[in-house]
Length: 126
Image 1: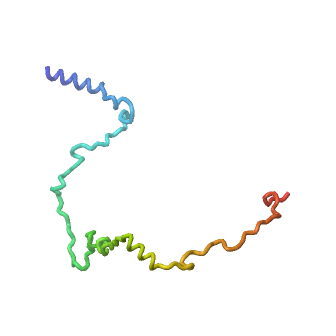
Image 2 (image 1 turned 90 degrees about the vertical axis):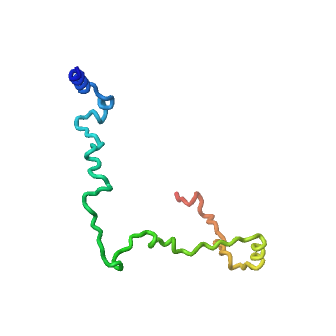
Image 3 (image 1 turned 45 degrees about the horizontal axis):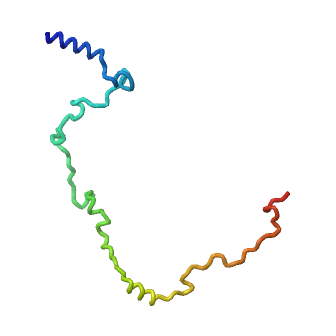
């Protein structure tokens, strides 16, 4: 009885498909599932590598230091000095400062603009 039921289930599996296998990319006969099998996915555990790693050894002076923190320039900077100015300090600084004409940029337009009154019609000629 169990063999007959198993045979019937196998026959139904052959003809009844999942909805995504009827149409779409999975229905193509050349479609290959992207999910790897269990024996293909991870051949060995990462903790039990079959081959021992070869670590090169040399003189410490000739080996490049790959540590990031020893080459990080941001850690070698001096601390940022912050100054807090009170209103009295700013007023004192402004009283000490004297402004000169040369402290400001020169005005870029120093010559008078002359209009061309002969440009009748916007400068176009007939």
